[in-house]
Image 1 (cartoon, rainbow, N blue to C red):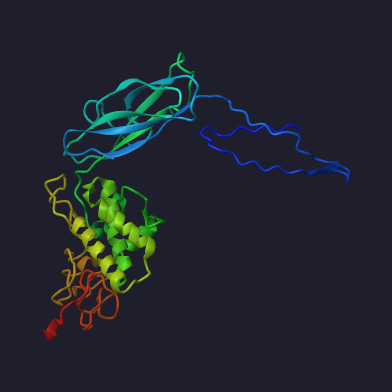
Image 2: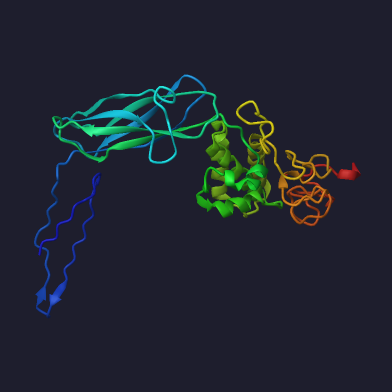
Length: 360
């Protein structure tokens, strides 16, 4: 009996386990007579996808990587050409969103990777993500390549849209550009994202997750990517301290610092960058009585009526189901989101109530 199996294209090594089996009766055993590994000598070529932000002016190269599965003894070449559009999403337009390219790439013996740069045109218009293609075709006179993946998609992300607050995203789920987010090392589906956006209480990781979900929704909608270093730091923090872990001490301080940076970004005022003044929720929390929130340093309940905590506003500054004065998004009997040492309603956005309210 001969067992022939083919390794997938791109395989770099094989692990082979040989087993003998008894076929029938006590004296008839299966044996391994020979093992042979044979290269099919196919010059298999693939091209990857690229995602990049467009920028505000000039051009930025979208660099497509073209791979040859393994080194070939003679030169292998493929031709390429760009094309508008993709199977889903908005189509980019040659000459307006990117500069068209065409040509060929060659793999000399011993070479397994080449690149194809495509200039992407920057602008300051708010627009959806757009896609174009780079398509490969074989040159039969050069190595007879096999095109395993003959087209790569270039996705141009907008970076001109106005960030919106967590309150907006909480109340406008139909406008969400994505249905899941990765925070730390965990994927969260839409219902979990909404739960984070409704989070109340003094757990700094939950307040950080609330702002991080809003930021990732903003970025997916095309807001300024300058916040990405803070997003990466927040993801790293939540990998160590997952949402709900309620850290103390220095870890809580760091969570609140990251949360405040994201909160400031999510509440940027940028109406002149494609955000209509009459559009409810552009940089506003869009809860009843919203307000930017932040740390409540004067002990007045912070955040304006309802604060950024959202939910039912009983005209007392409370969060959901909080009928004590001064709520904000905080939990507890007095609505304090941070460490409210006086239990009289501090906390506001989720930071610490650093003053003694009426005692000062």
